[in-house]
Length: 246
Image (cartoon, rainbow, N blue to C red; front, side):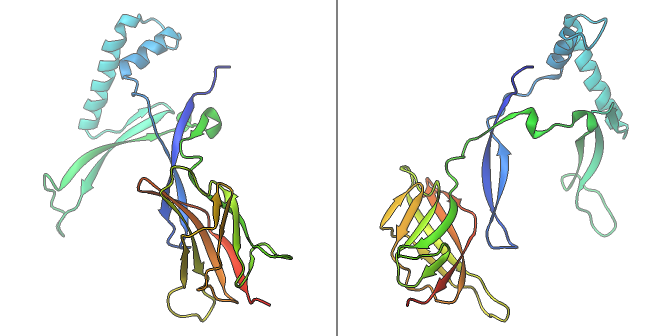
């Protein structure tokens, strides 16, 4: 079996309006040049997928197929390539109340849709995350005291945040952000407390003095953030609560 092709992707972060956190959207990067149609025909001939043709006929066959596709679309017809893909003509833009079409405001688009014959799976490729080491993750927070309980912070105690990719040598800065979780009946905006000064920091640990603004009895969503070269990398939301000092 031939080796799987390696595809490089990056993860783009977008705000999640429903939760106030972030969602992570993968996007392929570093694409190779697209293979022209005549080269596809040539390769199909070489693999004996097309019988009775010589490779020097590939360009004329490809041009002929493309031109006929265009002719069908100009006649308003959809084009179906077996079970692999189909193309249709669509009208874009906006009109007035009478449905008047105007050049420049309206246009014709051709959209391609894959069929079952072009069904691909993640397992068909080897995936490499270009930013895999940049996005921080929180495992837990704990107070730096005897008998501490994970994610139950003792007011006044130094906080230890444990996780992955929490900082790097090329970072401009790091931050830990606490956002209050509002309970039923709470009014107004949630309290937000940001920590930017750290006692110690490493890829798996951030330690910082107790943020005096945190309120005992409240629950918070916690995020770790890294800033580098104008890009911000934000962790998952992690739940933690605050209890009074004894």
